Amino acid sequence: MSTAPRTNIDFAAPPIAATIQRRSLWVGIIFGIATIIGFIFTPAQAIRSYLLGYMWWLEMTLGCLALLMTQFLTGGSWGMVLRRFFEAGSRCLWLMAVLFLPIIIGMRSLYFWTDSAAVAKEGLQHQAQMYLSGPFFVMRAVIYFVGWGVAAYFLTRWSGLQDQPPDRDFSSRFRALSGPGVVVYFFTMTFASVDWVMSLQPHWVSTIYGMIFVAGQGLAGLCLATVMAIVMAKYEPMRRILKPSNLNDYGNLMLTFIMLWGWFTFSQWLIDWAGNEPDEISWYLARLHHGWRYVGFVLLMFYFCVPFLLLLSKNLKRDPRSLIWLAVWMLVMRWTDLFWQIEPAFNRDAFHISWLDFVIPIAMGGFWVWLFYYNLRARPLVPLHDPRARAILGPDID
Image (cartoon, rainbow, N blue to C red):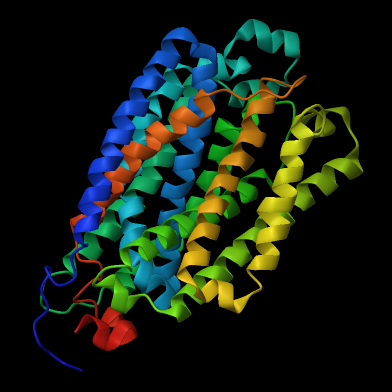
């Protein structure tokens, strides 16, 4: 292997990254203005749409972090090629922490358990009342973000140190943090999904609910990174780094996450159906009647069945054009799933969708993508002085 010096310029993100970054900021500003208008005229609907958009982009952020830790634990070419994309997404966590503030401010419009009179009327159990309190809700959120932020900060900081000579092997410290980090992520995300989404209907409880979100976040982070990598692969240096075998791996991983989501979702439904208790089936009754049943049908067919069949094709998984469109579609399906999770809690008797359900996620996405490409452009697209990267990618980074 050549020992010729490598420079950041050779492996910097191509100029198209700056163009996308600039345009994303304008998208965020324009749709952000529309979001402000929505909050002025329809504040109740706006905060609900805000929660939908927030959970969607949080999925991609935490999905990148979880996959980054998985890559450090398992190694392999699949993760090394996407490592800098996972890092760029993980470093957007501070933005998501800031964007959580409107949810805290508007929590009285989202969660009826913040109103003591409503709690007494609904007859929540004493244990639920103790857990679902405003100060405890905020304190738990702080704990979640601190846990995620510590993992993201140290992993991306150590990775950045490997951009400068000499070659340094940090694999032991990566694994030492990523192992406990994955465990912390699973537990905190389970509680966060309960706090931020399931508590919209606190009478209903599911012990597998958090796993559905974990599977969805893994899929969202993978699809986002795959889309970004394929876009960058039209230019150097990603053109010579991203291989058809990598795309095949990403397709297989997408299939795995889709199957996990399908299994967790079916298991949750089966347990509630078998129990047949009023509180247990109330969540599904709100989502399987009126127009909401058609959203559930769309998820069954176009989130599970059709992608499952398509991803059995090796040729499709190795074709960048086909895979990128499928990845984008799966991100749309993640939004649809979250919409089905959140919106019926406020509109149980009729299907309802608002223009803000589209505008606010796009506004958040504009700023998120801007920050993502800012992070991506700050470093080479591969860790140049990581011995494992050189061993896996070989002459492609020489």
